[in-house]
Length: 266
Image 1: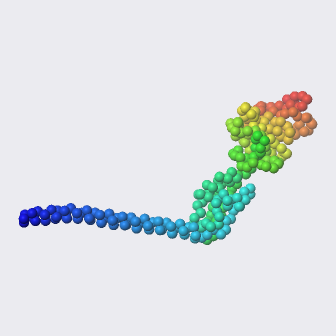
Image 2: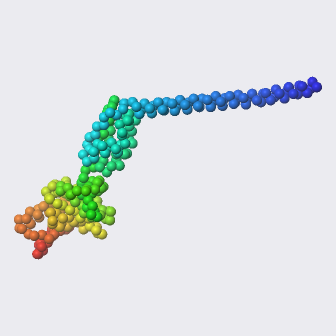
Image 3: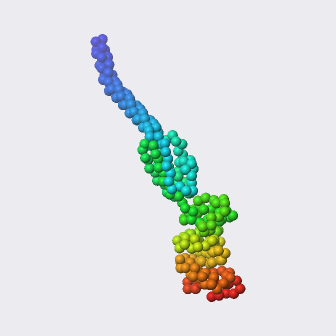
C-alpha cells in the first residue's frame, strides 16, 4: 500500500513539473497579447488625435489664386474639392495638383501654406495657341496640339486656324504646329486678317498648304522661316504689280511659283 502511495506521489509530481512550463508559457502569451493590444490602442488613439488636429488646426479662411484667366476661382475650388472646412495641415499639395492637372486649361500649379489661415495657389494656364476646325466644330488648342476647350462663339481673329482632322493624319499634325509656331514667332500672324493652315487629307507634309487672307499658299515641308520671308517679299511685288493670284507655291528650294488667275508667271 505504501508503495502505491509513493508511486502516485511521483506521478503527481511529474505532472506538476510538466504543467508548470505550460502555465508559464500561457502567462507569457497573455502578457504579450495585452502588450499588443496596448500598443495597437495607443497607435490608433494617437493617429485619431493627429488626424483630428490636422483637420481642425489652422482652418483655411482664405484661398488666394493667381495666374488664372480662363478658369474661375469657383471652378478651381470645385476641382480641388475644397469646401471651407479643411485645415492647412490636412491639405495635400500632391493630391490637389493631381486633381487640378486634369483640367486642360491648367499647365502647371504650385501651392504655399501661409500659416495660420491662408492657402495660396499659383496657376500657369495653357494658352490658346490656335483654333482647330474639325468636323464642323472649333476648339482651342495649345502649342502641343492638345484640345483645351470647344469654342461656342465666333472665331478669335488673332489666332491662326488649323483646318482638318489631326487624328486621321497624326504624322503631319506636328509639322502643321511647327509652321504655326514659326508664323507666330516671326509676327506673320499679327500682320494678317485670317490665316488657315490646312492639314492635307491622305497625304504627307509635302502637301501642307494655307489660306492667307484668301490666297492659297502651298508651303510643303520644312524651312518655314525662309519660305515665309520669301512670301512677304513676293506679296509686296504682287501688290505693286496688281496681279490677281490663284495660288503661290513655296515648295521649291530656289524658286517661287505664282499662278495668276489668267496666266502663269515664273
